[in-house]
Length: 126
View 1 (cartoon, rainbow, N blue to C red):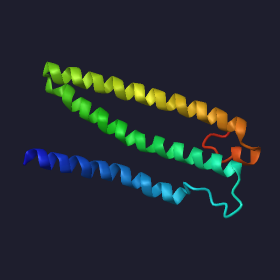
View 2: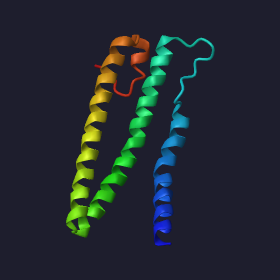
View 3: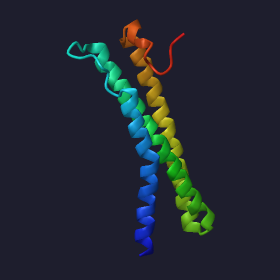
């Protein structure tokens, strides 16, 4: 019974963290509004929006994994401490890979997009 309540609590907490990000994505316009005249720049802009949305979803998941690893680390049991260290390093490596991939995609988008759409990217080039 205790496992079931822990499981339900975890998913409720996860829903409370992720659902606001999903609703905010709907407000900010994940899909560009171009009607029937969508072009290449609109498609690239959509891919950029999806990438940013995935990054924004991965932040709360990373935080939850850090918290879980912290609890495992605080137990003091050698096996759980080892597992916590593995989780810490996996999350850190995942965040670094995610940020490097974002940097590569952002650089490629700056090269492929017309100047009109470059201003819509999250960081404006100077």
